[in-house]
Image 1 (cartoon, rainbow, N blue to C red):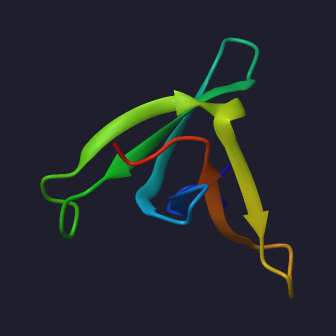
Image 2 (spheres, rainbow, N blue to C red; image 1 turned 30 degrees about the vertical axis):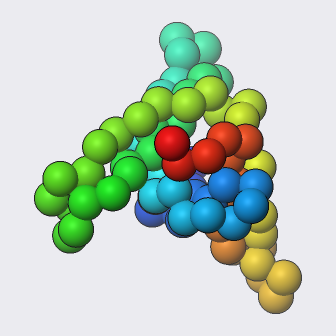
Length: 77
């Protein structure tokens, strides 16, 4: 989970949406939702939006096991 925090989030059409700010887990420890920070400059004026974890597609770097970006099945709007 800590590898996901701060990852760039884009739409399916590669429109920049924001960055993954946090993960929400249930009582069993399973991730249920992700919080995406949208907009703002240097953390000021950003809006946090929660989306279901299942709506995320994690894209890894081609050269390593690191995370390149996350694709959200939605638009920025």
